[in-house]
Length: 231
Image 1 (cartoon, rainbow, N blue to C red):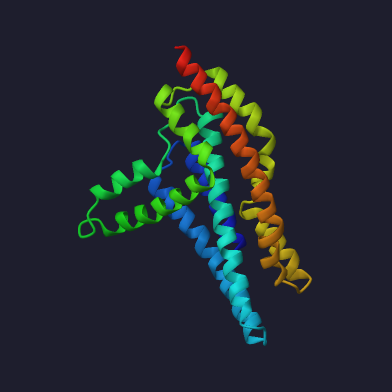
Image 2: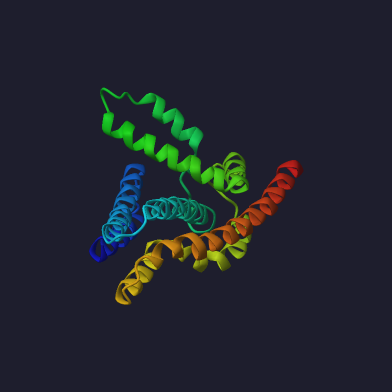
């Protein structure tokens, strides 16, 4: 898990630095992350069950796994939006469920089963993200319509000033935090508490960040609407 995490961080950074990011690469990267943690959840669950734990351990693991998936989806959506608005000088089109759905319909299961499967998984993932961040989704769509990727400096600056303070907190919902906590719990011989860590502290953090993010997106949406009406 340590090696996979290190390589996962390295390949993502390398792709961004060399401008070789692809949609398929993002999908495979996300699947790999989920498979790594699925193995962690499965191992912990079976270990405790075989040692005599109640079958309720499976429900606990399932709830923690769902929480993990939602937290990761929200953090990824926020990160990609932050890069789009505040860093990339000429940002590419952001993926949306409507865009992905049109691409998905073009693919044929018989001719391109692998690509269609990947896109089906990514489409479901993106829909989850948009449900979690309704106002941020609207903001992304409106900005895309108004500026076609060429976001003006004043809007980039405003978004960056509002969003930057939460970056470090979103980072806590990423893989590194989970690995550190899991290792610490393994050292003290209490890995079962990892499930509770997912369910309570990380979910509370997710709720706080989503609430703050949605308020920010709603305020910027109003600014963009006023700009459109004034032009």
